[in-house]
Length: 301
Image 1 (cartoon, rainbow, N blue to C red):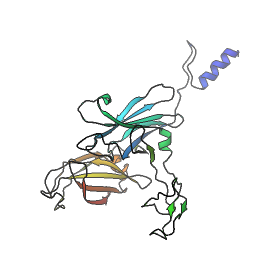
Image 2: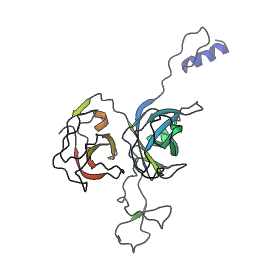
Image 3: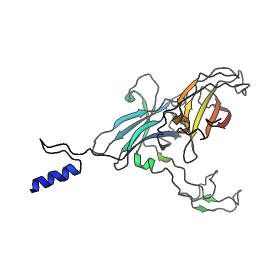
């Protein structure tokens, strides 16, 4: 076999393109999984003079070998909130052996234009998809110290912080696992963006629910309540992520929401025994929604 024939044979075994006129090589199999990213933010910059910002997040990806970012999805816009917890997830193909760079661009969406350039920018965050997915199943624990035993909680240790004089008023319990979310400071704005990745369930099941409320708490001083529901899915790390939101029903203590038709993978990853958290809120125009109550259930009940 000549040297040229040997090189061609190696290329065929690697799945490379054969020389002109030669037979095609075997297809290259790239390890890949479908994942979804949950996004939330805290402490966003307020761009509106008489209300709060109306944040929306656009996600871009730059694949290995590419020189530019491409949009892959957008969250919904949330009215009057500086601490949004977006319900809409961003689905991506996660290629384990490649570096996929993500850019999260946050905007104050104040008009009907679909163009980001027509909106006020609240900042950006960049990271790799591998950084987000690498937090799954993390078992790292805090290192505990008690820097000031004269504090009003003498038996409760505090975690070590970069600034030991600034203590967390609500520290996690000793030896608790680090949350599986990735949090990064927003560049060009204020606040922190939090991202969490989960593998998409293969379940194709669709769930239909009809929900009503009876004698809800009255939260409005001069009226009744404007109730809506938020459903939360419990992930493998026992963290609850916003998964679905109903419409708001105005001025009632006995709401009847429209039938909810949603994939079971959205609510419980297709696992009927997995916990689902439901919160009921009284909607307020300034974004400071009042919690009416909450409950826990699953699809088996």
